[in-house]
Image (cartoon, rainbow, N blue to C red; front, side):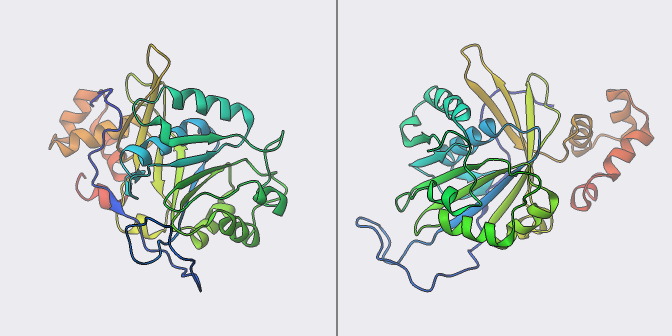
Length: 298
């Protein structure tokens, strides 16, 4: 399997962002200097980070991909020249600012904003949502949502109010939730145009950590075959974050390698001999893949 350290590499063709389901009843006049003659719609996306995924690393990758490639986990969004990041706490604010300063060429278009309170804000409350603030049309807003208290879950009412607080004409907003329950995750597609779940996974050789980003199960993106991505991460000798983003079929490194070899038309016996496993093990791993993947390999 390739272990190239070239950042941002991906073999997947970006898909287009689904159209927003809700249409506002009225829209203000577009900003002066806008190239379009009509209004620019708002777009709201959500990312759900499971326990074990660094919110700082996830947001760093999101901002870079939006700023350079105009993609959100392979989904075509459009290059974002100006990005505002609302960090979850003061410690992550310092980390994000430090790494963004090492980000070559275009870092001046990304601003990291600390919380306006000494403790992480609660965006389920009206007082917390006021702290999000507004951004200008044609800008992007990334909000790191701190983990909620386990006894008080996000409700439909909370999510609707939060989306309205981040929604603004001509603005791309991305809410990065942390440690949601499965029931809370299931509410997200009702309010956001695209939803991705991010889980820790085994990194490829030469990397310190990795996570896998997938369109939420049952969503339109998942049903139409939008492929998951693995983001391999390490620090270089100068302390800069290095990333390798590739299409991913499994969080398990061995399964990824088996799939790669099978796609090269290697037989189950050849793969087993190469990796040191018997044919039945190789077959079981391939059979456990999603249907649209395993039909080409088993």
